[in-house]
Length: 184
Figure 1 (cartoon, rainbow, N blue to C red):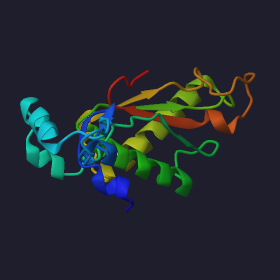
Figure 2: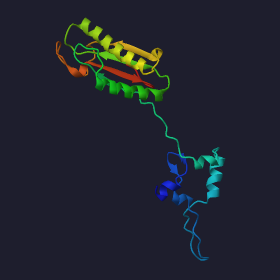
Figure 3: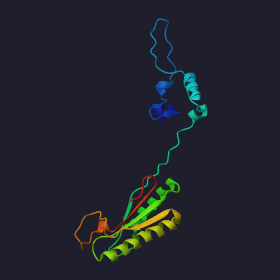
Figure 4: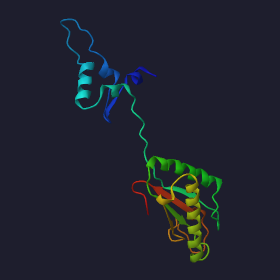
């Protein structure tokens, strides 16, 4: 660790860090030498910290990494006429389940979509099945069923616009969102 990293002992706010230049005691001067004003005596820093309601012990502790809720969207794709979760989709769903744990008990929105190949009624049913497959996968990873909501959009919200009857892999998907601001 460099000398700068060793001296960074606390974070008052996003704009101010205690660094070696602030912690260095003023250098000793000869009687006639001008004062440089470099460095703040530690007693003033501690008084400021305590006066602000912070404990001096907080200076010795590194700032904890704050976990941020990343609510997606996470997107997994399905083969044509299939609600089987592929290994690639499973890896994405595992990442989403892990990310969910940083969001507490947030609502999980699971939206199933299909391409425009086939009858609309069939595609709505298929989008229900792919959403249900993702919901079951999440339940198996410890996400409570009570926080999950599924919606089947069929072919009504394509990711890639196509003509009716066209099979488009990017439209056969499930989108997952959770946390603040999630939903459709």
